[in-house]
Image 1 (tube, rainbow, N blue to C red):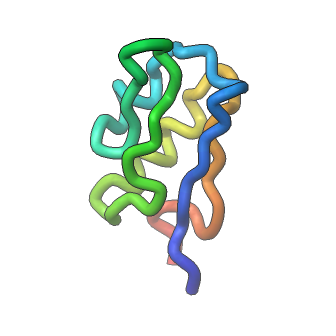
Image 2: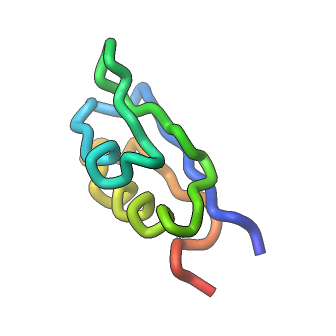
Length: 73
């Protein structure tokens, strides 16, 4: 089974910050331009659900989850 991993598209990001508020262990915002910074492309299991939620909350669709969804067997 492959490990889920994340990718971000900074060109698509609008700097809403939903990702950083939802999963601060996985995402941050660049202090200069406010765009997403991916801290953990392969988040620990403890942060998987929050990372998956951040994917769904991103208004620009700038975050992609690759591989199995968090919590799936």
